[in-house]
Image (spheres, helix red, strand yellow):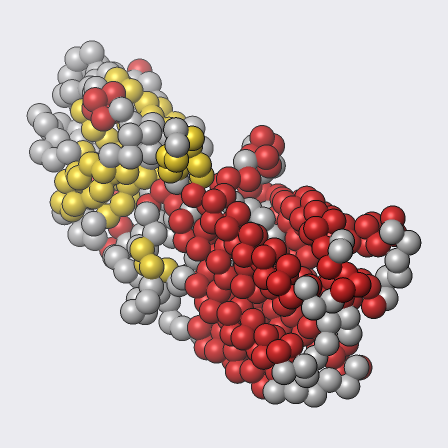
Length: 420
């Protein structure tokens, strides 16, 4: 989403992430004032952490979601579309501060854990703010649900295979609430001087909580790279591993506070969310009556126009084979062929009395457009001489409309069709 400010175009996602980062930095500056030894080079540390964190955040995201970029390498650099991993940011930021400590000839013991503790004292608040950017970008949502707090996702932002669902778990909000609760606990422990910066307690507690909490939330995640043949995501396995390491370090240090109770409650809450029953918000196309007419919405990416259509559904083998053959006109805005599974399907024009545009769709998205397909030259033309038209890739629905319609609608690949 773009916004205009003083004649300059700004990506709202980037602006929100920038605000989140600024809040974290200003909180850190306020905290470090009480530590004379470290405040004089606070901004150098901020620079090292941010530089390393930014590089690490993007590289980690690209690595774990490589399928999104394998055929679109230029997308790696489109940061404004989202895709910054907090795990990569933590790792990159830690590397950045280690390099700075080495240059300043400081130790990697207390000095390192001071900056790590300080970072995670502010980080949960920044993360919670940054998650608003996920809402703006309509990303980081979970499985479909009919729960009262479900969020509506526009058709063009829906994950493939879920085009028939409209409302989803607000995964970003679950994470933000958990992080704010964690921040409240951290600030209480710091203010009451129960934990001190430089001991590593804050860092290991953050790693333990976030690893387990976010790992459990990943069960609700739609898009993820799987870890070999397991049902767990690659990111999820890493998160659980880091969570176990964080908890193990706290146990080793003999840390026993109410923090463990709060963490357990939040983790159990996320498990309950993961167990929520997924229910469709709209019927599947295959369940609609054969030859019934239903209202659809066509979302056009280029113009952002929403066009309402009345389409006739054909979803039985006999009706699909017959199609529009012999008709004088369609009788609606188009005929939608619904297939039982995605495959490359072949169409032809036997006994057709008018020319057509054929629109190939997969999971509600237009993946190909074939314009001005001609009817037979005569009603007596030998059927064996009719040309055949194969879909350019796997499709699960095909829309036939009168010739010239695709041009009139200014239809483009990527436009989305949704049952209303």
